[in-house]
Image (tube, rainbow, N blue to C red; front, side, top):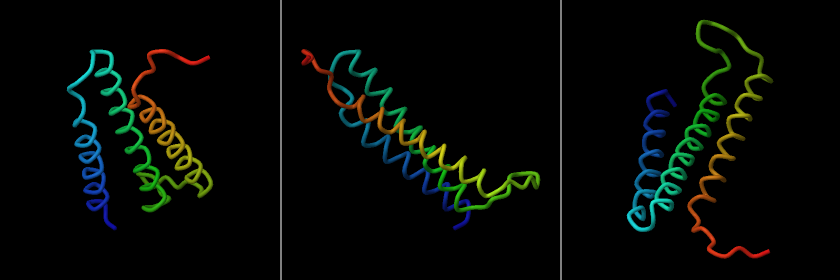
Length: 105
C-alpha cells in the first residue's frame, strides 16, 4: 500500500470516531460534556498512535535523511506507540461511561 492509502485510512478512521462520538453529546451537565470531549480526544489520540505504529511496521525500517535504525529499535518504538495508544483508548472508554452517583465500598 502506498502512503496515500494509509492517509485515507487514517482520515476515514478519525472521521468515523468523530461521527460516532458526537451523537450523544448534547445532554448532560457541563462536567459530563467535558468528560465526553476529553474521551473523544483520547480516543482520537489512541487511534493515531495505533495507526503510526502499524505504519512504522509496514512501511520501512529507514528513517528520513537516510538514517538507518536497527530492527529491534524500530520494533520497540512501534510497540511503545501501540502501548500508549492502547492506554489512551482504555482511558477514553472509562470516560465515556456514566459517572457513579453513590460509590460502593
